[in-house]
Length: 168
Ligand code: NI
Image 1 (cartoon, rainbow, N blue to C red):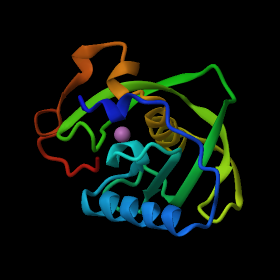
Image 2 (image 1 turned 90 degrees about the vertical axis):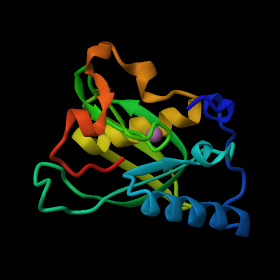
Image 3 (image 1 turned 180 degrees about the horizontal axis):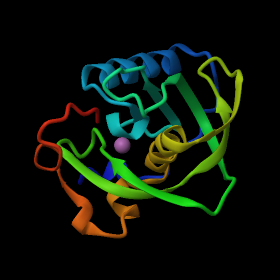
């Protein structure tokens, strides 16, 4: 946070299946897995392109969090299917060690493409919808604190959740 590259409107990907795009996706996957993240957007590694990735693996310690298949989403377009907004905790690899409660639409449709150019069209809710809104915000230069309404719900992860393992 503080790097101006996180505040840009990212450019569309024009060509799919290229060595450059595949290499970017590999870098992003390595970064996300190395840092134990749930998602990552290209601007977070300094790349000005509309590419996000996300994945939630099944974890018996968090039975309330439904798994999300590993997804590479290029040039995403979101549609909000409800006015209902839910607040829940979010973290971000660009703000390490912090958590905040962020309002998000509870049900969305998202469309876009994978790295090979195959189309993706999903209607999702809950944490899946939250992750997609968080990651696509990065493509517009929006970090989650900019969405927060109450900064009394913002703090250090190890203070807020002293006994819990968490993902970024
Ligand atoms: Ni983030």
